[in-house]
Amino acid sequence: MTILNTFRITASMAILFAGTASYAQPGSTTDPSISGTGYPGVKADWLPSKTPDGAYDRVPHYSTPIQWQHLREDDILWKKRVWREIDTREKQNVGFRYTGDENSGGGMFIEILLDGIKRGKIKAYSSFTDDRFTTVMTKEEVMEQIAGKIDTVTMIDPVSGNEIVKYIKKDFRPETIQSYRIKEDWIFDRNEGKMIVRIVGIAPVRDVIVEGQFRGQQAMFWLHYPDIRGLLAQYEVYNPENDVARYTWDEFFESRKFSSKITKMSNPYQADFKELGNGMSPMETLYESQHAAEEIFNKEHDMWVY
Image (cartoon, rainbow, N blue to C red):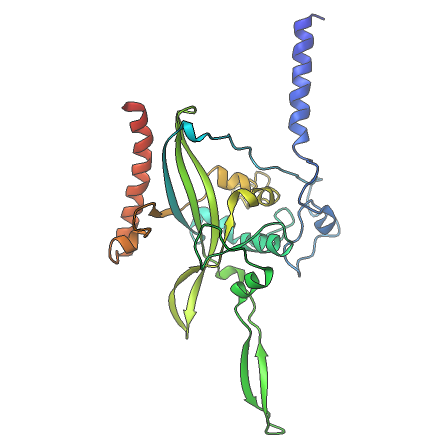
């Protein structure tokens, strides 16, 4: 056997073992004993199967986030901060509304995030101050933001005739979360010679209902995206085309598999398109979103042409 052939065999074995090692990383954030499949259950009432539920043996999948390339400030020729909104009712975003199974943690995407907050794996930041991650929220504050405060109702006891106070606790319904906001940076790196996008933060959005009337939408809390990538890499996204070919949530976001629209770009007024347009119609804001996306695309093209 020649030295060259020996080198080729050794290199092939190294690649093989490097590929298989990525499925079982030490220090994983998951606890296989919880679900039996490598994914911790994210709902208290969710029970894993006591026997293999499938036609083949499935091993636990331990994944790590896709490695980001290091960016140097001196190599950045252009940057623009962009805010997006993901509507989970769109067909391409059906994974956000999937109720979950043993391969995805047994819960919806919002439940995965809430479970990570309650377990202390990730931090939530208040959305009432700003979206710059300045104020860390406690678990109690997050749950109050989710389900609301406990209401007190004064009633008359029909037997004694005395006034009694009844406490009403609202239950959180994950299906009511119909959109998410994303804050990201679009960067042209001269070393790569292309546009690079990096998500900075993500926030679930709830509808604000006052006295039965819709009053708008409010981000519930912000999550620093680089800090939650380790958690997102442990859960899979539902694939309507093929149950065995699923992305992790980290791969889903990094591969830009979601559908969204741009609602704001960095500007001196710190306002979104609707505010800048003095009350644009939904169709006008959609046109403005498409124009912003074309502007970013053309910027990358102009960097090469000029």
